[in-house]
Image (cartoon, rainbow, N blue to C red; front, side, top):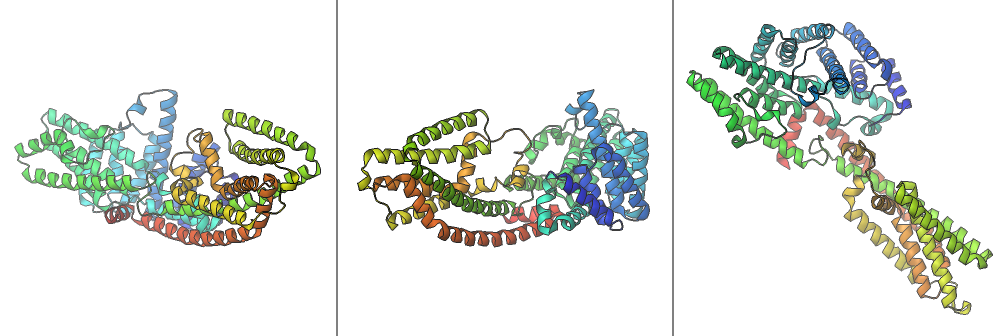
Length: 569
């Protein structure tokens, strides 16, 4: 979510007030990567804060992983800037391995060395060192780092510590409930190291294929095997589903010959799509006497393809791209917006009472101006409609609805004066008219809310961000804007229209009849809507707590959460 300047200042103040809380400091730095609080000197501020934190806590491995993420993100942003302004070729080659600036490479090397010393069984450190060395074409050091991966047993990029730190920071500023609305969701979490590892994998694959062409088979087999080991560790132990998916990529890259389908956009998730690319390498392994390695690789390929199918199902099942299945965000957004719409219904009823009351007083005081009022409303309605067609906005949509209903009621009142004598018109409406208005208004509102609950949930600001609706220009046409207002004003509009039309059939002035119906229903309807709103508020609070708990649990081990909830659903 986009933060205001005051929100930025509050986050920075809390982070500065907790200098010894490592998680809060990590959360502030991670949040700075997503939306820099001081764009002019963001890199210097972030690196200086992080270096100072590392000096105070030299044995916290997560700080070195965060330093790697900061460096990778800056490298990526600088590469994109250079690509757009100078060279259009790299953007079309996302899997190309580019060299790292010497000063940044030295900082990364120190951080990765220290991380490997602290966690010798964590494959993250030798894998990223292999990427760094291959990027700078230090082939021997890269191969040694890749071989060390076989002696590791787990993968932890320490992203959860960054997510937990962000959550704690936002919770201190906005509270637990507010943090859910403000913090970047899991779908927007960046994984810059995955793109780096993927680019390294294609580079190593190409080098291995060159060795095969030159007859250096043992060297080529070692490179393929190192990639496969890295892929299996990522696939089986990475806590994030995206990381596990990259692990399956690496296994398939390591098992293919001179061509690979993973350079494109397609999802390889079956033996039929993999075999045309992988059979040649497995045959070469068997011809070279590496039957054991070929059987092991075949087994890992089947496991990888199975996981890719499962993750593909999870991606298709989730309502928002990147949000893990089982997180009830969709239900939370719907409940939240139903509460907002209930408040709009209450305000709409109050507004209709005031507007109709003013119109009735005006016409009663100046009865000869009824035709002029009708003509003025017609001109206003047509003008707003024309403006709305040219420059659609929510304000114009509201004006069109209100002026249209008023024009209908005033026009019917003028017509009733022409059709009926004053003596024939009644002053009071039957209670049946009020009951009919309540039944129809409640039925229309309930049908709208029940039948279009998914669309109501999509009106939530965070739902629009997750759906990508706020990332591009205008995304709603005039009809959608009118429908959005009708969701929140349906009760008042139906009461006014039915009350006015029914009054005409009963030879009563429609404008006065609609006002009498609204006046008689005002307090009972407001009391009922207040009760409905309080009930929806309680449901939303409970749903909010369940969603927050699900997000925190999913962040602990995103991969296991995705697999468990995909298979259960």
